[in-house]
Length: 388
Image 1 (tube, rainbow, N blue to C red):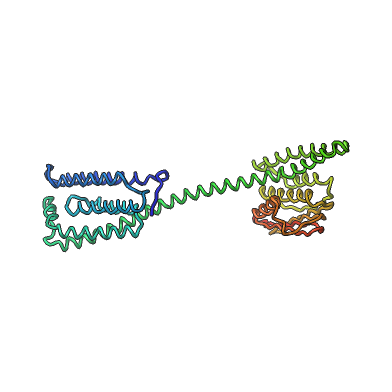
Image 2: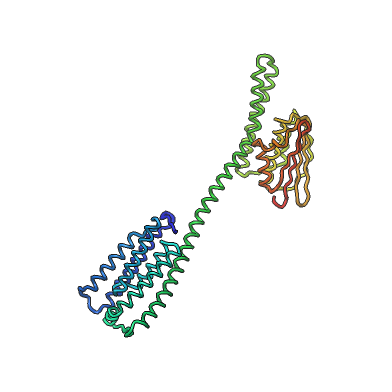
């Protein structure tokens, strides 16, 4: 079944133009070969034949249901064969009809239709051979006295020409299918790219603002509770909220910097994030990082920033260790705290932890979280340097 969308490829119009052109050539050859141009039954039948060709070419049902296309193909083939048998048709249009049928039906149906048409066509030539011989003589063409040799030649010619037409049509169909698949694939790639971009922006927003806004909310809630009982602590909470507001603005600038591919310093950005947590947590840092591509640096920063934020929000830890190292093949980073830990089965419940895992996978690496209640948490990240 071949279905064409005219907005992608106006195949029906192309077929119509070719058929009308071939009809014009047939009419020209008819009047060139006729010695006398006068009103006759033969010319009347030929005019009727031309009218049928125009009618068939005006409505080529490429996108109609299969029954409609089968009916069209059968009637069109029968009309052309009948015209040929009576000597008023055209071999050129007969084989063009085979091409057209190849665009309407599947290959098995085309072969069946062409085979039945060939049998009827050649049987009709045998039964009407004397009339055809007379018409040929009028045009100065001498045919054998008996039809056997002429029919044998006609059968061979019909088979060869039909096979050529079917093969040519299927080559064109294959090319058309390839074009349509290319268009659909391009649309799918575009849609996938848009989805990936939306996911990336969601991660950027979460990584840039999620932790700061959470901390800001906590500080404002604390200030609200303490405003009547302890004005001094309320003032401290408000000051901290102001600092977090400033940090949110910095995070927005950093997210925009990441989106616009502006210069990015991993060591400096990590130091800024670490300094934000140091008033509450003692963080020991021992980093040894190689020169990394821009996107790799940004992904690593987002992973570590998310990990530090989770420690600050959930771990209730006082000591944190951040270490890294590398060899020729791998870069490893380890972040460990002495907080309250959690059940390993809950690792994938948070959006932040899912983000960390997804970012590690984007780098071709592996993120492992080891934890147990009251025993702290260790996050280990390993990425291949060749992938960076």
